Image 1 (cartoon, one colour):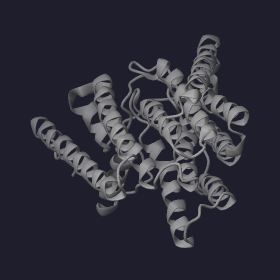
Image 2 (image 1 turned 180 degrees about the vertical axis):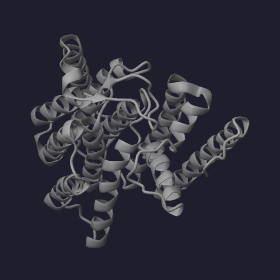
Image 3 (image 1 turned 135 degrees about the vertical axis):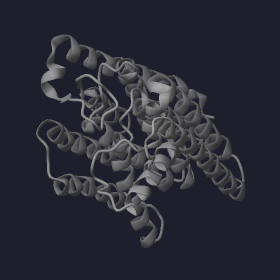
Length: 338
């Protein structure tokens, strides 16, 4: 472990935390937050009162500036996050066609992967590009409960920072970039944990999803960690969003429409509420990230066995949530969706 880098990582995280918190506090105190973008509750929402969705205004500028200062080698990731934040902010305020948003997502991912290609076969880079596109969007799908997406960012990027710190490869800039993202997410959580005063909005969730994939890809391409590591770190979000999407596809539903069928949404609805749901997810997040970090020191076959074992754990958690959801609907005389 490169303990010499620990003070630098803590400093970057602390400054990012303070900067994000101060920006959001200023936006709320001045009333500017309400004019930038406001989330109005509807029948698909889990919240009941209008709330500013300006978290991205605090998170993304702080992370991008921090990366420009302490991690200039990662400029493609920073530039992509900035581009997606700008496009998503326009979408938050005025709305943009899906094709325009997709072109922006594709441009950011393509610039990253083909501007900094990993030493891997062409077909594998194509597959990774598709997974990065999915991560950009699934993070947005999972931003629907107080404290959830911010917590995943805080814990997930902390896991990245620790892994970069203990790596045998030179990964100081990756560590500092991850620390900046974790710190900014923690600053956002001050205002987003239940009852949320601020939501993340697309201008926060889309760039964070991109950064989760971009930094994960960078670490793999630079041999800081194996290809499974980023997926395991963010596995709770990947698993929930992927299974929910597949279910909706199998039922022939429009997957781009808003809904309340994610596992975390069902947990809030069947009685846990926002706080308990977030805390339960935090336990799962920390457990998966801890397993990922411990597995880095294991032989490859053990690593993949751990990935498989954790997938089974997540599957069992999903089955448990489904079971409680069915009982909740039967108690309320409703027909549950599977």
